Structure formats: structure tokens, C-alpha cells
Image (cartoon, rainbow, N blue to C red):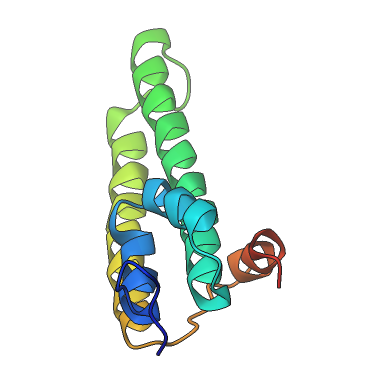
Length: 121
């Protein structure tokens, strides 16, 4: 495993791509040129960026549905959906960090192809 001038090996840099979700993914995508790290950075950016946007939309639907009524105004529906997405995000986040640290190129379906394009495979 190669390391950069900063002393970070690829597996540690890959793990750090996921630590703060899309934020560290963006940082490592901009500063690291190694293909393994760029892939994990791009995958983190796409995956957790999309999940962050989905969470924001669901929170707005949760708040809007409660104030404006309608067929989806039941708070339990939106909060339940949001709780499931957050739980699955947590599990995915942990799995991605473990796989990157083990120096595996763990590919999330649908997202990995986009990450390959962003990382410049």
C-alpha cells in the first residue's frame, strides 16, 4: 500500500473519505490523485450527498405535511421513512469505512458507476 507525502496509506485515506460523508469525499477527491482513494472519495460524495438531499426533502415533506394537511400529513409516515433511511445510511457508512480500510474496492450498486466516472477511471 502506497502512502502520500502526508504519510497516509491508501486504506486509511479511503476510510477517511467516508468519515464526514460527502464533505470528506469532496476533500479527498480534490487533494488525492491515487485511483483507489479517488474512487472511494467519489463514491462517498455521490452516496452520502444523495442521501443528505433525500433527508432534507423528507424533512421538508414531514414539516409541510404536518402544517398543510393532505393525504400524507400523518407525521408517523414521514418520520418512519426518514428513520429507516437514516438507519440504512448508518449501516452503509460503517460498511464502506470497514471495506475501504481493508483495502477493498467495495462497490455500491448504481453509485459505483457514477463514482468511476467522477474519479476518472
